[in-house]
Image 1 (tube, one colour):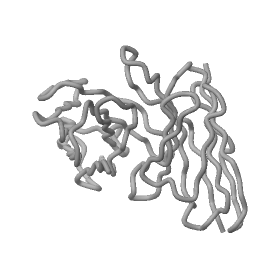
Image 2 (tube, each protein chain N blue to C red):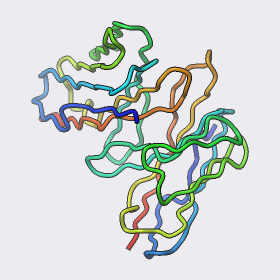
Image 3 (cartoon, chains in turn cyan, orange):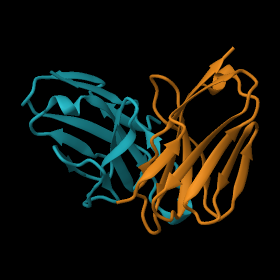
Length: 115
Length: 111
């Protein structure tokens, strides 16, 4: 049982390049998230998907797009990377069902540096 | 929009001392969760509180949810070096699983 798997683990981008962070969960969860973590800033929600086919902006959505490809996968795309997007990105999921508990399971993180 | 603040941002304690972190939301929450993140790791779920005024204990950790469901606290009794890490609260409003995380409190325990 892999839980939440995100790739790549490390990436260096040049300003203006684009890339997609991939995330998949094998827990049959409805809800998925993308958070970014900067030193001293805690975890900030970028986008949230309550269920397959739905997405909702979080606290810091500018500069990002997401795609909930199916129930398992939720990808995050940077169309034109900027140095301000240097961060650690976490994908996460939770069951999203009322009687199932709301524990959020996180992936291992993706360290992204934009130069 | 919903905002969740935590204080203090950092705390250094001697091993054996107690530690408390406080979490405050700008909006009423349906539930609040607490997570621990070890250095270089990812956040790991500790507990969820749902009811107004709820208090839960896990060994040396005591969690409280405020009466107004807008604040919460985590208290660690007699800290150990294994308690080192950053503690986050996360809250959602009624009817959603959209969790906003607090700013976190980084705990260092000096042996």
